[in-house]
Image (tube, rainbow, N blue to C red; front, side, top):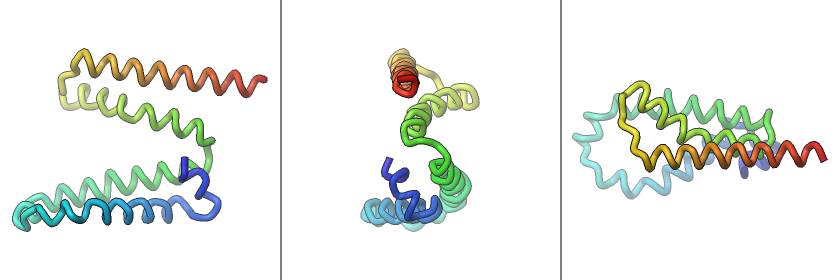
Length: 124
């Protein structure tokens, strides 16, 4: 939601760099605990995840915030964990527990309730 308020002063790309910088500062102490051999061994995968997945996804997200309401963005972001579980099951054959399914149903139900409430407010 803060990204929505910052959109007038900062572009989506600037917000991405700002949030990434804060994350790097917070996670830097944990990076020092990793051995350099483990880092070098996993560097190609880390670069792929960092550049292709995280960067492109974040740029699209922050750029998309310029075109939707903050309420809609929050509802859409609630669907992210549900879609991750769905695709993990579909693509990776990852087992889904009953508790996970209940959590997905609760997330989807809350998203639906938020959407209906927003629709009702717009009609009034």
